[in-house]
Amino acid sequence: MTHFVKKALADIRSNRFLNLITIITISLSILVVSVFLLFFENASRVIESWNQGGRAMIYLNKDFSLDHLPELKAKINALGEIDEMVYISKAQALNKLKKNMSSQSTFLKTLKENPLPDALEIRMKSYNSFEEVQKFAQSIKAIEIVEDVEYGQGWLGRFLKIFNLFKITGYAMCSLFFLIALFITANTVRLAFYSRKLEVEIMRLVGATETFIKAPFYVEGLLQGFLGGVMGLVILLITYLMISSGMTQSLASYMYFDIRFLSIKMVVLIIAGSTFLGWFGCYLSLKQILK
View 1 (cartoon, rainbow, N blue to C red):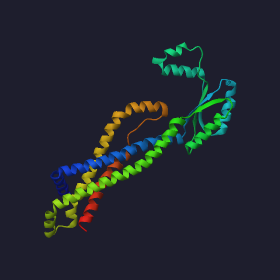
View 2 (cartoon, rainbow, N blue to C red):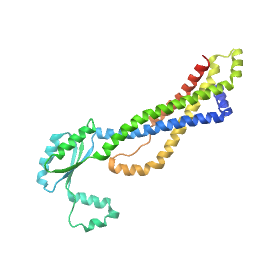
View 3 (spheres, one colour):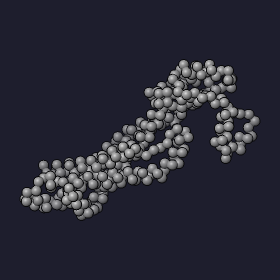
View 4 (cartoon, helix red, strand yellow):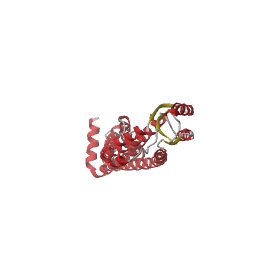
């Protein structure tokens, strides 16, 4: 095995430019795939959090009083399954607003009366789709004493459209880059084989087995795939660290989740897939050459 690795490394050194182009192509392919997987992992967490129970704010009209609260809670509970329901008075809401805007709350001191409504914050149980959440929210809004219902319908609706668009684009882009990387890997191995054609013929004459002849090329393909996968993930990680911190803080306050990097399991799968890509390109090339 050591002999095959040394031979593969020698081939890589003797064709540095060609192998570098192959590794860069594989890394770009893995980068594209990883970007989509990063988006899908985080998007799936958002969707899963809503499936497990999304939050909603129910704003009450001016006619509301605490006497109406038990009846209102009973009506809302009758419409659908609620995990949690918390009453927030207009005074509590204003105090929270002042605390959140402590450095910019000068104008709040000039208010003669509290403009905020009383509200109920609810956490809904599992729903199968966004349409069911919409239907449930509309049922709550139809209650006479309810002024409005806010459940992130604006950003969540846009988010689902972007998610579906990314899903279609992701499949197409990943397939395209996979084929490009496979083609370049196969051609790199082909050129490496032809550069050693005389050596291969001599090895056959002295009785070398096909496995002994092919093994260095397979090792070369595996190394190209592995290095390309690692390089693509490193580029993604650096980019993620550069842009994620500020974005995470902004989104967390609105969407109750933070952006995370790919899971260890996904990283291992990507590197394994990239390594297999290098091997498969080599396999296709040698199969065509040696048939």
